[in-house]
Picture (cartoon, rainbow, N blue to C red):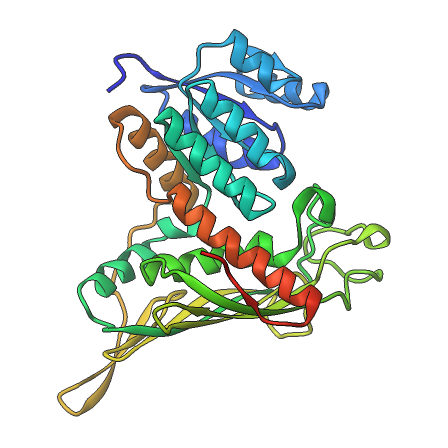
Length: 350
């Protein structure tokens, strides 16, 4: 237990830092102090520092780590820099809350896991949907056996025309991919979390680039369609070593009815469930029944994510998302992209 406030640094002063991480750290000002922020774009770093009264501003996070006495750091950079920044922070003796996805490839995710173990520090990822009250409630049901053996799941993370018109979301070099690695990964993590993170065995994937490379109507701003280098849709099937399967559908742009659909459906031999909104399906006393919660708490997902990280750092507890799980999900993501590239199923290594 730290006797003083948790001293926090921020790497990357973009939208996720300003809109999510920093405001939620500030809700714990009695036990958290944001000491410094670093961004390679000096203007962004200075603006962020001024807006949130962060005393020290840097353009090089390595200088920040060398000059500031920090306990924990949020890594809010584009995906390409997650691994390098997180490993440097861990080697500097700080805990890490890294935005999702873990990294660009499995090797980086493993290196991050090893750095956390080597230095005895917390490394957790920004899979904030785990903290949704629907997910936490269903987790209690699954742990209690309400669904029995969960043998199948369906994942949807689909937008009608939700290609981000800001940031680097359409830049494959910096992001590693499109909707699969950005929003699909959230629902994939949610499903795996509810299924106790089974070990994947084989994946088969397909990606499409049919809408994003031409000008069109955008519900999330005007995207850079001339330099659109990611997929706009990804489909996949994952088979696990325990025999379970997951079907995945994710898109930034698809010709569907709803503007934004995020959901996980689970099927077990004693019951099934949809997560958003939460409804459980069972057979009891020769009757098919549906169960819906009458009340769920309303605390924000991101707020709970940061709160849990702070609690873990101060009490030296295990976080909800672990480095080992980060490696598993990175295997699946990269396996799906490789399968889409080759047109063949990919058997994942041990």
